[in-house]
Amino acid sequence: MFISNKEISDVLVVGGGVIGMSIARALKKNGAGEVTVLDSGRLGQEASSAAAGMLTAQADAEKRDDLFDLCYEGRGLYEGFAQELKAETGIDIELETSGTLSVSFNKHDSRRLDNIYSWQNAAGLPVQKLDTRELLELEPRLSSEVKGGLFFPRDVQVENRLLVKALAASLKQLGVRIVENTPVTSLLVENGKIAGVETPVGNFSAPIIVLAAGAWSSLIPLGGPGETERNRSLSLDVIPVRGQMISFQPGKRLFTRVIMSLTGYLVPRADNRLLAGATVEKAGFDKNVTTSGLESLSRAAFEIAPELKKIEISEKWAGLRPCAADMLPVIGQYDNIGGLYVATGHYRNGILLAPITAHMLLAQITDGQNSKFSTLLRPGRFTQAVSV
Ligand code: FAD
Ligand code: GLY
Picture 1 (cartoon, helix red, strand yellow):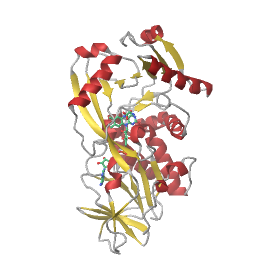
Picture 2 (cartoon, helix red, strand yellow):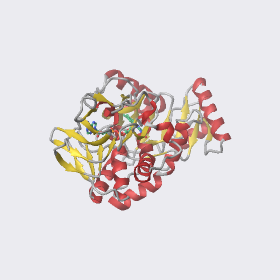
Picture 3 (cartoon, helix red, strand yellow):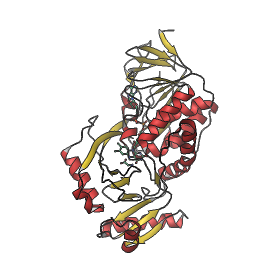
Picture 4 (cartoon, helix red, strand yellow):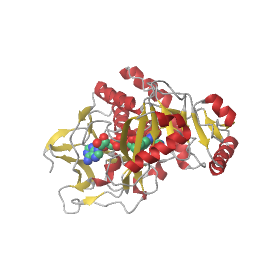
């Protein structure tokens, strides 16, 4: 064996965001034996903490497609997921069930909402069309310039910072080994099979590895004993897409539910904070908040709620969404490298899709079972998989 083992596990999960932690938890709960999560920083502190926590399967769906089906099914798992986490850890992830409003401020946006209403209503999905008066009755602090909107009663939200806390607590209770501040520098392959990972503090070996390193997933090269393994990378095509966010602390709750417009969204939290998001930018791995980002976020927030102009921004931050070339998640076994699984590319829906991703990978790893989404989301879909 070429690896001088530091630790031996049955499963190693690379990356402890919501995706990696949800998978590690599902595996451990279902008898996977020794499960280790390695993270280059601290658990859950990247995109998973930066997110807005919206579980908006319907409000974002312009048409019925595969992503809609995945998100819709994923949303259906959340109530059980939240209840289980509460029972396991005592942490309430604040699954708020007051629904989501999508609002329009001009004819173009209204036409877009009409299209969404038409297909979802015809499909028998819960959605209501509201006029200006009805919207202002529901949310009196909404701008009186609002032209119309849709109400999605089943599109809800969670406090994602509590979600990462709950997942980390669950892993600790289950006995999952957590190794923080330890970047994986390569994935070690031997005779066409995964054998372990390399880190600055030594190698970790395991016959099964789940790569869930979010926006950084494409950066980790392959390594191993032979020339063919070294200095090659996986064909994943996942890039970072920055999202900047701000929040206000008005001292009281201004809105009851999530409100989305074509240019931004407002998310009211139980502690009265009001989050406003988000930019969508290709800026490499830069997580800075920018002047132009703040301007566009403020503009979008003020359009929905003009009174925010009088309230100071209390927090600002940015995170990197993992985005694959076709903007769909990348979930499943990696072609040609036995024992290597991938779960990344969740882009704008990683919080929503964490439980269903864990569900799908658990079935694949433990029973070799594919779901109806497996072909669509397979890691090998991009280019020729690296053959070793
Ligand atoms: P991350 O949370 O980024 O975790 C990846 C982990 O891998 C990190 O902890 C990192 O330290 C670790 N890592 C990286 N490289 C290595 C390495 N070499 N070795 C070891 N560890 C490594 N989704 C929703 O569903 N609803 C929303 O409302 C929503 N809003 C969003 C708003 C913003 C502003 C942003 C930025 C994202 C939003 N998202 C939302 C998307 C969601 O946050 C992401 O899709 C999701 O968090 C991705 O989870 P992840 O675990 O794959 O990535
Ligand atoms: N899903 C919200 C965002 O990505 O900004």
